[in-house]
Image (tube, rainbow, N blue to C red; front, top):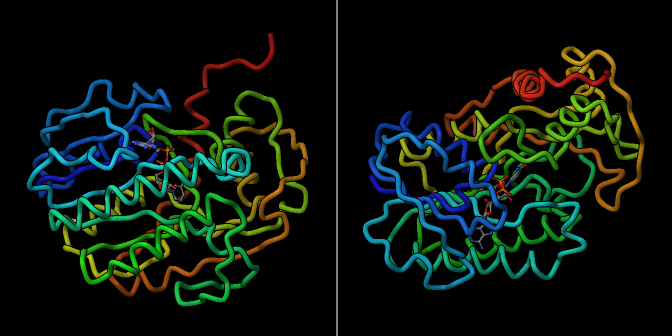
Length: 310
Ligand SMILES: NC(=O)c1ccc[n+]([C@@H]2O[C@H](COP(=O)([O-])OP(=O)(O)OC[C@H]3O[C@@H](n4cnc5c(N)ncnc54)[C@H](O)[C@@H]3O)[C@@H](O)[C@H]2O)c1
């Protein structure tokens, strides 16, 4: 089969590309990225199986995918993704992400390609001991980024009868990839600890629990969909586990003994605590259970030869 991966240079996309040979059904992959994030390293030394093509395209251009034919599936990862910064660059983010989504949806509709869409557990913005996909009363985006994710889900819902898709609400990604970023919780904590500059934590957040998804489990999600032909026009939470900041710090301390903590305030999700259910995806046959401590270890290991004191 032939697939398109949008946002292929990003944290998740680049991991998928690196591991594509593990999905035997995929024979050709077309990678799309506008390279605005400058992550050229994501396309260094790509493997030659499956056949991989890279195109620098901007998906806000409606015609950017028009020349690709016979595409079975789009894995849509292209987005501007910094939730905390989304307050500042709100307009740019709404424009970019919604236009990308429109281009992808229109392409799928016209070409009968299937779509894997990535939403986010950040659309849940109310405290809850256990939130599942059907708890619509707990959906309350707390940032423009999360609001856009909800708009994207609604766009898919509207077109339900015209395309085959599946949408996953991913927890915050942990783990290493060529295009990895360090602006989300676990990876940023690992970076701060490794550079000995102190881990910055939102005040009140120490005991707050949030969902996390290992990038290795994110890959399993895509593999599962492709192998099982799993495009049932539904939405699923996807996470490896729910952890408090305190639990994450404890895991980091196993590999980095001396960690300084600095407390700051943040405009988003300061007092919200939610545990996300994985039951729906488990019932569909996919059990995600990668240990995020392995991601923490691997991330800290990237900096292992850096000395912090002269
Ligand atoms: N990383 C996480 O913690 C996380 C959690 C939940 C959901 N998600 C979602 O998963 C998807 C992928 O996330 P990621 O972490 O890999 O993001 P990322 O920011 O690392 O990568 C996104 C890629 O999209 C590209 N891009 C952005 N706008 C584009 C455009 N107009 N045209 C072409 N390319 C464009 C960027 O250059 C970048 O390489 C996003 O939809 C994101 O919202 C991510």
